[in-house]
Length: 131
Image 1 (cartoon, rainbow, N blue to C red):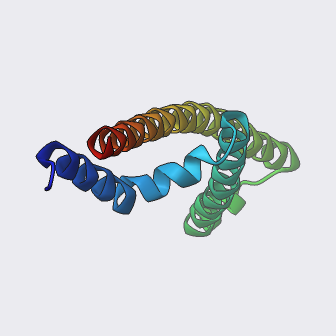
Image 2: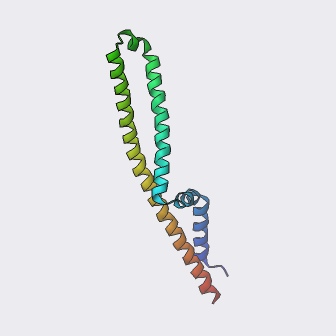
Image 3: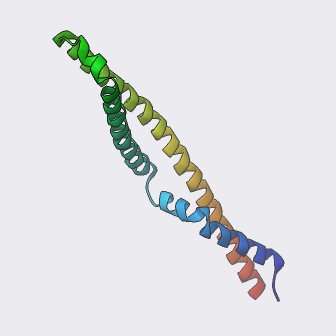
């Protein structure tokens, strides 16, 4: 005889495993610090690439205006501004990525805990029914 509560629990667990559970199990396989550090580094690498492309595109579009009255002092000032802008963007993106990935890891960990708790309840239902 089928236990309706047990079937509902099995459906709930299976849908989690096939959906969000795949990502949650991957995230939960890392320690939080390792996951956050790795993801933040990857984000900073892509941010560096994006910043380089944006600055390069800006210089290509405004090349004539930039070189029109360029002196050595203006060249160094422009370089310093680009570097300061890069550092500011890296700090902002690094902080945002770190907090985002900490939150993502914590939420995944809670969902995986809930999954294992429900799996344990399902096991107890089977044991109770077989006795």
